[in-house]
Length: 379
Image (cartoon, rainbow, N blue to C red; front, side, top):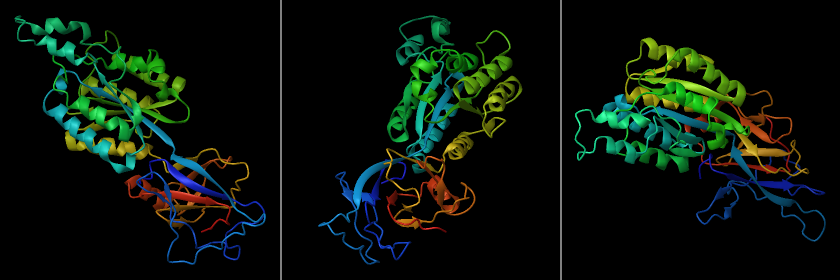
C-alpha cells in the first residue's frame, strides 16, 4: 500500500481507562497496520514486543475503537501543454517520455493531474486537414477554424495520478497529435482560466481544499494574439492567482529566446511560486527533470485526518511510518527537525518533518498509520 492512497487509522479513544500500558508512555506494543488484498484491515502485533494488555470486557474499562481516514493534503497540477505544429516529432516524443516518468513516480501517486493541450481541436478534425482524398496545394487552409482554438474543455479531467495517468499518456500517444497546421494560442489558453469558462468546466482546480497549480509547457511564443502578448499574459496570470488562488509555473521546451522567453517569464514572475523565472528544458531529459522538480516542490508532507471524533485527545496520539513510531517534534518543519507536529490549531492536519518528509517525497514510504488514546512519544 502506498502512503499516497487513503490510509486507515485506528483511533483508540479512552473511556475510563485506555487499554495501553500506562507505565510506558512510549508503549512498544503498537500495531503494524496495513491493508490486505481483500480490502480488510490486517493489524498483526509486532512480534518483537509483548502484546498489550487485554481490556476487561465485563466492565466499563473498554477502549472504544473507531476507524477514521487520513489522506495526503490535496495538490492539483493542470498541465497546460503546447501541442502546436512545432511540437511534432522529437519534441512531442520527448514530452511524452517526460510525462510518463512523472506519472509513474510513486512519490506523486495521489497528486491530482489534468491535461489541457492547446490548441484543442479534436483528432477527427485535425486528421481531416491532411486527408489524402482532398487535393489542394495549401491543405492548411482547411484547418484555420481551430488552429488557435482554446474553448474546448481539458482533454483529461483532474484526477489522482493513478487515475489520470492512463488518459494523459493515451492522448500523448494519439497519432493525430500534435495536429498539423496549428498555432500557439498561449494568451487565450491562460484567458480560459482567468476570465473564461475554466471555473465552471474545471471546478476542482478552483476549490479551496488544497493547493492548485498550472504548469505551462511551450516550445514557442504566442502566434495567435493580436496585441501585447507579454502584458496580457502577465495580466491573466496575476488574475488567476489573485482571483482564484491558482499558482503558475512555466517551462520553456527546446530553444528559448526573445519574445518566447519574455512571455514565459511573465507567467513565472506573476505565478506566485518560488520559481520566478521559467525553467528551461532543452531536451526530453531536462523536461523530465523540470517536471519532477516542480512536483517535488509542491508536494507537501501534510496529511489530513477526516472526521476526527470530539473525544480524540490530540495529546494522546502517535503516528507510525511503515510501522515505526515517529516522535513528536513541536517546532519541526518539512526540512528541519525529525518527527511530526500539528499543522493546524484544530488538530486535523499533521506534518512530517526532516528525514521523514524526505522519505515521503522520495516515494519511499509504504504506509502511514496512527493510534489515538495513548501518551504521545516525544523526541
